Image (cartoon, rainbow, N blue to C red):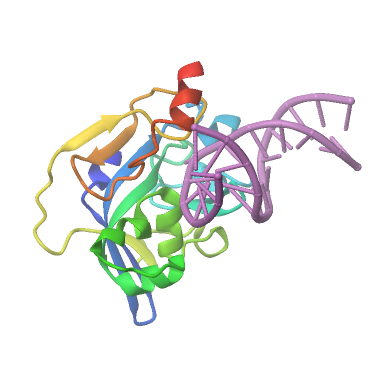
Length: 200
DNA sequence: ATATCGATTATCT
DNA sequence: GATAATCGATATG
């Protein structure tokens, strides 16, 4: 699923406002057998969506500050999911900047909108209260995943270890569109996280 | 009841 | 390179 999602487009339609961005970086979480997955503790009120049908939004609060957006995968009872880590903005850029509370001074600032799981959730106005448990495949959905409108040439997929976790470090489950400028973790990926990872 | 820590980011040195 | 922000889940007393 992670591979399938790369290159597709996340769309938010709220009234007349339409946001769209290409999915360029995701991570797979494998369910109960994956120590880094929220589902590893079994079904709880927080992660219940993961154990339901595929195609639903799992949204949770991290570090008390940001939301992370996932889509449930696999059949009912199996809690696999895909975390959205970075997008390439296509439409509704001004609205995204407003949601993020930043001022764009040039194309150079675009990655600040949607490069990183917390950033993209904020840009799309994704919250647990609003979106957790929503069916992303419903015709009435405010949030969904669609095909690219313009022809899109995939550059190829690169696979790396997942970022920012302390369990199951090193499992190759992060998928990115090779060379895409909107992939997260640009300059400082090597320091605090790298040190912690090295100890484990 | 209290402490610790996280699937993060912004900001300061 | 280091740390604050901030809240909820989980561990510890």
